[in-house]
Every structure is written in structure tokens, then in C-alpha cells.
Length: 419
Ligand code: AMP
Ligand code: MG
Figure (cartoon, rainbow, N blue to C red):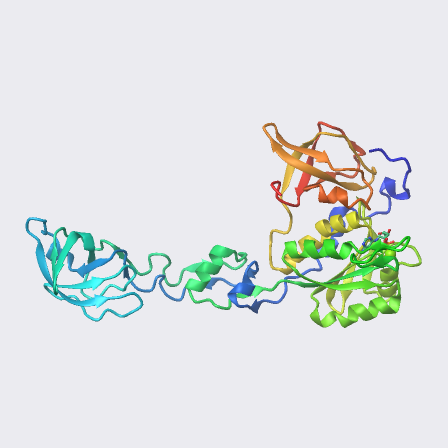
């Protein structure tokens, strides 16, 4: 992979470094206002306040065995050769208050999970007993507390169940449900409106006329947004027409927490995003020292973050990873904004423009000698198949023209290496 033509920007002059561009964006992104959501909608969201147990969990003591609730002192001496006889005065069933208490010389028949009747301090399992009518003969006693699940064994009232800032996964949902938090206060998932700009674009279902291009960015962004935890809405293809674009954006304002558009941010006269929003001063447009993904637009439309991405699909993917995904994480209240990275040995040279940070599509795999990264194809930002074969983006920093085979690079791992 070598460059045959030298770009104006290969030197990196006049470009904003990636870190600085990202900081510009992230410094303007805030977590969404917390909402009380039903548990199933709160799944995957970040808790906005500590959930504190109002009661002990469990909140009543229960039996761990089928058997008899008795007084341990009365059965301490029981042996198969000299059983202790007790009168069965009632039953304790699951989900019900026991219909009797245990007094001297008495026992209550109890089921696993049923509340312990007052007066009893242990359970004698059924296999250590013989019954006839309303008499139980205890053949082997139980010490105090035996086979009793005490109240508060799991969590004590007043303890923090789930701290603010924790993302709610399956275990947290189960715990919150147990503790009666049916509508936890969470940062909601951002609703993101996706627009594709370009007169040449057609939906994937259509067959292109010569020169037409199927809209791939909308679907790439849909998947990326979903995977990041956002709720994407596809607003469709917008022609390269300033009024159309403005109208489409404004029509979606009410249902949007953010906008992402692709295309139309370069310098050509057809660059509709720039034409629509730059003059109004809503968006900033700058060139980032990165390859792919150099031109970027970012700002706010009526208070909603707007990301204007370049048009080429690989640029869209990389820009999403570098700028939008961390912003989505922040909007969701997460403090871990970035993907995990590994240090990997390149098995092939990777060459890029010297003045820019290159994000090279690679497949990383773990070997006995550590992580190894293989480029998945050429550098062109239109080559979407190179992304679909990859699971990582190798970072070749600005200032390095060629990272040679055998050298080690940081790799952003954007999906499981098993996938
Ligand atoms: P632009 O920045 O609008 O000039 O677009 C740059 C390149 O990306 C052009 O070749 C476009 O046809 C292509 N492109 C723009 N939007 C899309 C899209 N939604 N899906 C696929 N390719 C696109
Ligand atoms: Mg365009």
C-alpha cells in the first residue's frame, strides 16, 4: 500500500489533530436528562442515582427444606432409638402467613420457601422425621438456625443495591426487580436521526442507473448506533438541496436527541450540509488530521448535537468510532467512553499520509506471541468491504508514514474477536 499521489493535506498543515477535534466535540456533549423508565426499557441504561434497599432482602426468613419448624432445644437429644414426639399444630405454605405459631412440644409442617412461623428456630428436614396423624417423631434434631434462610441474608435494608453510574445489565435488572425498583431513574438512550445526503443516492432495494449509488451509510450508521446503545431513526435520503435538508432536520427536531448526516461536508458547491448550516453559524466545519474521515462538521441545531460526517462509507465508519460513539456513551451517562485497545504486531507494512493519524482496518487475533494485526485491504475510504472483514482499527500516528511489518501498533477493537 503506497501512495501514488500526494495530497495537499498529507503534510498535516492546517489540520486539527484527532485528539483536539474529539475534545472539541466531547466538551459540548452532556448526559441526557434522567428519566424514570420501566425496568425492561432501563436495560442497558446508566443508573442516575444510587438505588438503596428500602428493606432487607429477603424481607422474611424462610425454610430451605421441606420438613418441620421446631424449637431446636426440644429436639437436641433426638435419636432414631429415642425420637422426640411433637404435636403438629399447623402448616406453613409458600406465599402465605403460617397458620400457627410453634409453642412448647409443638411443630409446624413447612414447605421450602415458606415463611418461618414464630416460635421456631430451626427446621428438621422431612427425612429425619416420621409422622402419624398430627404427631411427628423427630429422629435426628437440628441445631439453632439450621435450614433457615434468614431475612437480610442477601442485602440489608439501607445498603446500596446498584450505585449511580452503573450500566444496568441482566443481574442489575434482577436485583432492582427484587427490591421493588420498577421504574429506576436512568439516562435514556439517545434518539438519533440519521440522514443521507446526495443526489446520486438510491435505497438499497433499487437498481442503480449508471452513476447512482445505493445508500449504505444510513444502514451502517443504524447498526453502529444500535450497537452503541442509541435508538436510531432513518430519515432517509435527502437531495443536495439546502431547503430540503433544513426542512428535514427541523421536521425531526421533536423526536431527536442528536442528528447524524453523511455527505455534503467538503468544499464542493454541492456540499449541502455546509451550505445549510454553516452560514447560520450552527455548525463548525473543520478538517481533521485523520485518514479516513478528514472533513467533519459538528455543532448544535436548536440545542441538539449535529454530526456532519463525510460521505464515503469507510470515513463514516471511522468518524463514528472516533467522534460519535464516545459522544453517545457520554449522552447515556457513561464515563467509559472509549473502546478497549490492544497492542498488536503488524504482519504487513501499513503506509499512510504522514501528517495524519491513520486508522487502518485490520483483523486482530491473539496468538501465543501476543496480538497480531493483518490489514484487510487497501486504504481507499470507499472500500466498505475492508471494514466488514476487520475487527479493529490500527492507529498509525501522525508523523509516521509507514508502520513496518513487525512493529507494534495500538488497535481499537470494535467487535469481539470471536465474531
Ligand atoms: P460527498 O462527501 O457528499 O461528496 O460524498 C463522498 C462520496 O461518498 C461520494 O462518492 C458519494 O457518492 C459517497 N456517498 C455519499 N453518501 C453516501 C451514502 N449514504 N452511501 C454510500 N455512499 C455515499
Ligand atoms: Mg454528496
